[in-house]
Length: 172
Image (cartoon, rainbow, N blue to C red; front, side):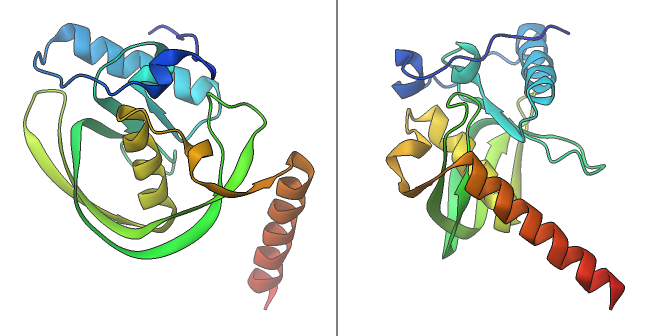
């Protein structure tokens, strides 16, 4: 597998609508494998093809929690409910974080690397990550949805606070 270069903003490919995948072949499988390896190498939880300079409707989300990565080819949003605001970042915008409002519960329809269709329901952080990557496929950047920017220091403080609360709960 190959570690690919992450495209950084303001590269124009990040704001272009991607093309539908029509060939499900070894080249697509290699792209998916390389994207996944690139995402892990860069400590991401999601990556979309335009972030590695490929204009195809291909994205991956992986929380590294013992589950298989979610590979989404030609994904479509079938249902969305509820709203939640949380902090997001992006591999193509290093050091930029902000509060983004997104649906809290979603259902998508997408294709596997062999072309077969599947449906997936997700909520919370998983739904957020999937929607963030799907936005990339339509040339929509998370910075266009930020309601409030957050500094690295503020983010670090929030993470430390959440971890402290979690440790406190475990001790109870």
